[in-house]
Image (cartoon, rainbow, N blue to C red; front, side):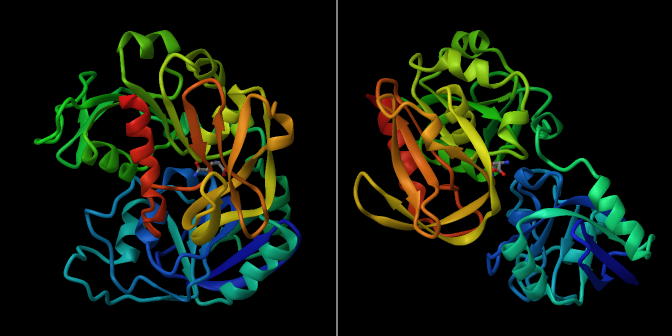
Length: 373
Ligand SMILES: NC(=O)CC[C@H](N)C(=O)O
């Protein structure tokens, strides 16, 4: 079935839907990971976006129950070069097309994704429409131009949990009790995790390292969190523009200095705002499993997994209060910071990987050490 992809600047691509009829409007972004499409699709940070993969063959290992990073598929459409309909993998339980159809997400293949990626890299991420229903290029371009876009929007309220939950035996457990610790851990730590669009691997790693985790909705009051008497507070990743989120930054500011805090991606950006800083939009963002980052405190370089379009503006922060700890070696943008007086640190990238290299997992251990101190 014919599908058109129209960008707000007038560029059109013609592909074929491999999931049946559909239409989607969103910000078009690219991811350079060579595998891990299921983790990309289930990462809540892609809410409101249309994702294209630079790797040309997708679907060849199917989908499985273990690689879910949340319970849903979040991009509005998935654009690939070549769809592989007959997966070969002992873990596979369904094809990518079945998975997308089950979640009502449009998949389009059979066009020059490299040209699309190069276009976005040159011109920047932009709004687009993908459709099998409206095949009039002028109408699609106009609708892309007229769409709301991500800037200033609160996307966190769409994906955050409605009720608190814990994490045990590799799955969410409804309720407000800190779940029991993994066997064999002495004096487990209690962590409250703010869910801004959390990826499950953050919860898997925290529990593996001996934490009892309680996940709470994004706007949970600081006083409620402190009343739970946690050893530390974790701020998750999440979708959209950090400056558009309502009812979150003031709570995080109220928690500063009260308990150790570790933030990842959107959690890092929210910390930047809580420190009194601002964020800005990168031209095309960082999405993939091959982003080089230097830890300025050790001089070590890590290859990191990333998915973000916004960035903390270090110039908006008081250098006496906040130290830059990590930078991106491709464009020198801010990748990590720590507060000089309060026990709080954060990274822009994804130390929980999924998908991507495991180089930065040590940061979870750094959080554990900070809580133990
Ligand atoms: N993965 C994330 O947490 C992304 C953060 C934010 N939505 C951005 O695009 O920059």
